[in-house]
Image (cartoon, rainbow, N blue to C red):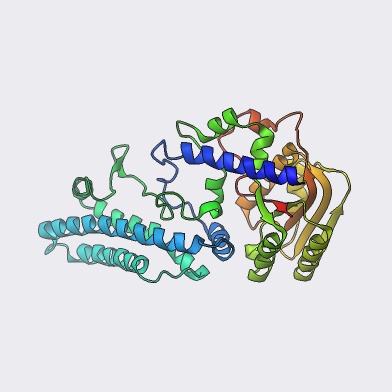
Length: 367
């Protein structure tokens, strides 16, 4: 088990090193597609703020810096507003008042980021409003011929507005990105799963430098038993909408039983799948079994081991279920991960643009 822990730790560091080196070389094209956070992603981030020491401070400082950038953008918007007023203000007061309302909403958002930022779940959800605030403001500006071009011109060297494809103003950088992702390993699932179309391509670089088995281990997080307990207990305390599937490798029988007792107390029905054999569900089997779980049901599986392809297959199913609704309450406990896979998963060999392991809570327990 110590060997598995060390290999997981080494490959996790190696994987993160590749990502850090390659991501951003394409001018952060993913991070410039607007805020990728959704409500489920924010629940994950909220848990991360409770579980990871220092993450809250990183988020607060980064959001303040983003607020300063948004304030610079707003100054460019205000200059265009004044130009519009000078041109049509007396003739179209209704339009100016509507634009002023949208500028005021933008200013209020910047003020929130410059103050004591509310990082409660409700406060985090309010951060998602900025996409609409910005879009509504730019929509009003576009209604007047020449106003958008003036905004881009006034932004040069200062604000972030630029044209994309020569017609529309490009999407902004993600609100949660300042000198890297402010969410850290609690980033949105879409980002953690590397939907990469950039050049250089993250997935191509990973496949070039890592074997399939090393990549699987690189997606494992090494934690002591009490931290795994804390993560699962926190989700159960926060409520069903915060629960995400967990794969836990190497947890002692004592801790495992404690967790199973906690899970059993939380759900009306717990389905068990206990076996001393390899875990080998197909994607279809996993999707059918876990997709049939009601919100008040959980499944707990205990198996001796699983190989990289089986974990990848499970991850594909879980990612598909995540996309269509609330993630299933599924807990898989393994003694170990097999060290060598005769064949990599077909999706890895096919060099698909997205991988399903990044957002999966896959823990290797450090004794």
